[in-house]
Each structure stands twice: as structure tokens, then as C-alpha cells.
Image (cartoon, rainbow, N blue to C red; front, side, top):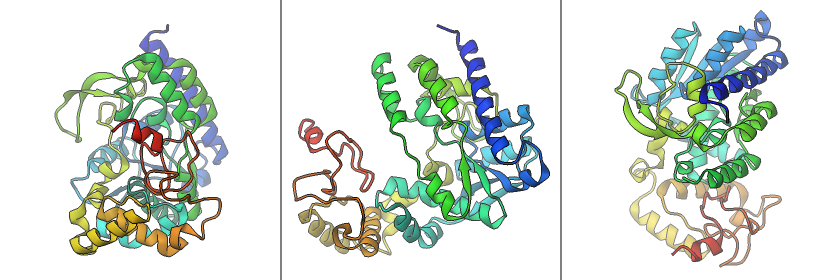
Length: 359
């Protein structure tokens, strides 16, 4: 078994090769015309800051960096600003309130993605806003950090799997089935998205050469740029150790947390749009139709989804709603017999057999 430093060095070699391929496909590392059309979506997280560190080493330049925040307290703001300053990047900070994200982007993103799952939509609102701004600035290509969390145990739900074999089996399965809405969201605004983590070379190397111990462990982590470090279990150790950046030991924050959009998932945010009486009456009626709607956010999403695609999604192609008591536990749409997560409504576990066996 290679040492952690040897594995980090091997990762850097593969990762930088994938990043160089992206640079070549988008006009070259430093060609002025190519640079003008290439940007990085800079959350200031471990993943995108590692891309910047590798890019500096390879001489790959970007015409700008873009970050979306809802307030000055958004964790992404401090880390992304520090990274952009370190690398001399023009930093475009897109400031939108949570209300603006919902009003401007929610209906069109539900129509594009054909879902009403709150978690995916909250993250997608932020991504849509950043791609729209990138298009307005004239960028054609955007580099993102998609795939790092899946490959290297970034998500906290993966930390609970202590058995190395079980962890690897679940990680490998997740990566074999991964899907990202990034391409659809970028394409809507005429942008082509690229990630060195989802590149076949990087992904294959990670699956073959990394185990739980390479990815997960207790380390000093900080929540905000300039904040104090606290010992905490975390993922993506190999990536954190491969590149020394302003965010190497930052906590993993989902897009909605880093940007500040998490408030959209809380019922008080919707208090002026959905009364408690409306919520109680509509969710009761929907439950009788086989739809589990547990929050005001999800009710608003469902209303837009049904208005867009018809009752029971009648206008959706390739999706089949089953009789009550069948299909996904949250929406009754057919998800087969093995899929545990429902992309449409966000139910997990979505199989009725899994729910009945875990009362």
C-alpha cells in the first residue's frame, strides 16, 4: 500500500493531466482568446481551490472567477475572495438575496430539470445564477469541482460507513451512477462545463487507488476564512493533502450552505407566500393522492412542477406514475426495484421495501 504522500503525488499527476486536457480542449493554457472565454466557478471550497493550485503549476489561466452569495456572512465569500486574490484573478461576486434566487430562477429551473426535490433545486438556483452571469460576461467554458465529493468521501453520510470494504463498495457504486445537473444548467446559458474530477482518467484512478483511509479522518477544520480550527471528522483527505491552499482544511459545505441559500429550505422563509392553513390543507389533499410534501418549500416547488407538467406530470415523457401504494414512497413514480433515491421528489430511501423494513 503506497504511503499517503506517495498516493497524493500519484493523484496530482493524474489530476493535472486531466486538467491539462481541459485546457487543451478549451483553446490552450494561456492563449489570450481562450483565456477570455474560460472561467472557474469558484466556491472557495477544497475542490475548486485545488484546481486553482494545479492550474498555477501548469500555467493554465482563467479570464475570471465567479461566486454567488446571498450575504456577507455566506462562508464561500471569504474563502473564494482569498483564493482569487492569491491567484490574481478578477473575481465576480454575484450578490442575490434568497428571494431573488427564487423569483428569478425557480420556475425555469424546475422546467429544465423536471423535478421538485428541494435540496437539488436549492443548489441548482445558485448554479444557474452563476452560469447566467458567466454568459453575460462573455465566457463560453466554465471549470467546476463536480465529482470530488463523490470520489473522495466528501459527503458526511459516507463517514458513517466504518468498514473499509463496505465504504468502498458504496463509494464505487455511487460514482458508477453519478449524475450532475451542471451540464444542463450550463447549457441553458450557452456555457460548456468541465470538471477534472469527473474526467475518466481521474475517476478511474481514484476508484482503483483510494480507500476509506485515504479519504476520511479527523483533522483540524475551520468553518469560516480566518476562523479557528477545530478537530472534526472530514472527507477528501487525499485532495486536501495534495494541494496547500487557503481552503485545504475548510469544512465541506454544500452549495446551498456556502452561498447562504439554505434559508430557502426553512418554512419561515415562505411564511408570506404560503400560510399555515394553506399548507395543512394542500399537503393533506396531496397525501391522499400519494404525494408526501413535508415543507412549504416543497409545496411551492410542487405547485410549479404541476403547473408546468400537468396533473401527475402528464406532460412528462419517459416517466410513469404508478397506482397508490406503489413506486416511490414520496410520489408513486416508477423508480424500478433498486434505486434508493428518487430524483423527482428527493425521497430517500425511496423503495417501499426499505421503508417498511426500517420502521
